[in-house]
Length: 149
Image 1: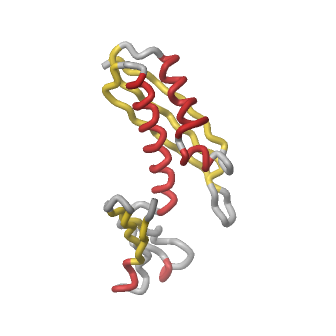
Image 2: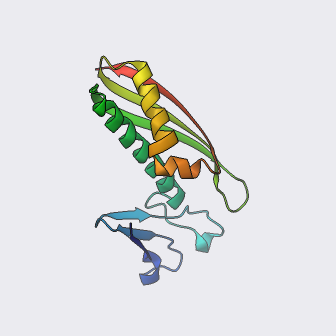
């Protein structure tokens, strides 16, 4: 896996803290710093997600992908899946994640709650590289609901 991250502020405003990541698969992701980061001349312009927000979002995407795939392999009628993430970070650098809660909302027809619980556990214990990695510094908790659709 490869990725190139380029600072966009190098071509313009000295205060800009924007970055563009080009992934090995050819996709582009913009990131920016908070306007109040460190000092006014060092902050971003709030034009894109923060880098750590993209880490959190990537973890949610990784785990939701696993949950859908596991449920589909079990021949469950999955029609939707979303995950709401909330997190806490350490107060001092490095400001690693210390707590992450993931709440899954799975939509489908006749999906047993035990199947969803099992799919989430398999994702976090075995398949989702991002959550396994973040679990080294953060306490990760999960909850879920199944919505009949």
